Image (cartoon, rainbow, N blue to C red; front, side, top):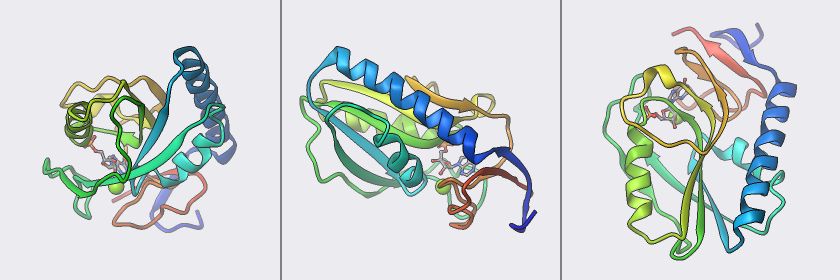
Length: 177
Ligand code: IMP
Ligand code: MG
């Protein structure tokens, strides 16, 4: 394996493209039915690559914004402490909000972000995650659009990091730590 620390490729590049295309189709269908203004919000930094690919597969007019929260330190286990590091520029009031996440693990991060977003009066709030680790869930999170369920392994690549590294890998790999 050329990338030190990656022991196995979990999702190949071509599989990722298929997952994103399918999600884009599902999301397009949903908002074409619903109508109204759509704002797609990516949680930084993990979602940036997924978000870039996903919005190009959504065939519906939309606005993009980003928000940064932190729940993990530089390790692989959740500290449970969620902080808002960077807030949105746009107002979400009266708009359809689609929250885009790289991975939902324990649900700690998302639970807090969803609650905060609901308080801002969106017309609707939907959640899209590239990856999902259901076996690790501590808080119930409703996922409307899910790319792929994965087992309880620490993964990197396609935006996902370990200590801010590996985000640039074009595939999703399992990291041995
Ligand atoms: P949660 O709050 O436990 O759901 O964690 C969500 C955040 O933890 C994600 O946005 C990721 O940044 C990070 N995370 C969780 N699992 C992994 C993983 O396997 N690889 C890389 N980051 C992860
Ligand atoms: Mg991360």
